[in-house]
Length: 276
View 1 (spheres, rainbow, N blue to C red):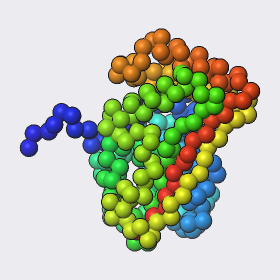
View 2: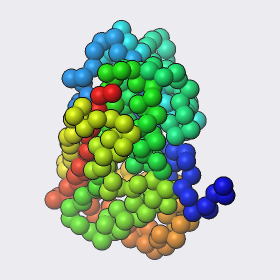
View 3: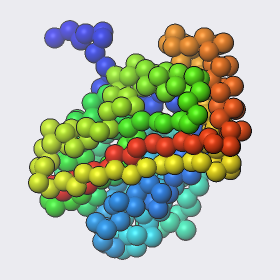
View 4: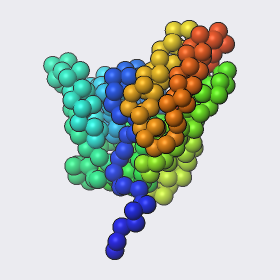
């Protein structure tokens, strides 16, 4: 059968690239600020795989939670996996490994290998979230836990026009690669059910990420300016989502937001724990 040229590619995509600004923002993620909802479900001997691990700061945090277990980080990006390996020497993290891999192309592990499969800000980049969860279910042991945390939207105050345009362009950029985009994570539990998990064995919840202090605004705003000046901005322009003038408007409004004493950011974080 011929392949429709409009069909999304069945492999993981990451539209924002792995520039130093992206890696810096991802490196601020920890177990305490990004995976606390999972901690009550862990046991010291569990094996865990973090799919879409990025620079591995959350992944490595699980090592202390699983001292008798094994922690594995998987990411399709070779450069970011190399960064994760170099940042986590084996003598300090003896129960931690990193490797490249794409959940949509199939993981290299046997059925029923892991006690826990963890996704963080990864599902929104997958052209086929249900297939990704099916593969997660395959490598889970009976009674194992699938845990996911994904942003559903980005909220800025004051609502400067460039920040709203940024949200719009970011969503379109994600969806241009076949991914579900910024406003889809509220359906995590529905996708998990389609992947074979039972509703009766799910815990559906949510958290928030909030930045409001001058230090937080400067850091978070500067991260986005860096992305716009780097791979993400170039990608948006190449897709025809904004012009150079539009990019400069966004940058200017991020800089205004950083300096605004009332500046505030919040993201809804949809969370799901599902047992096999």
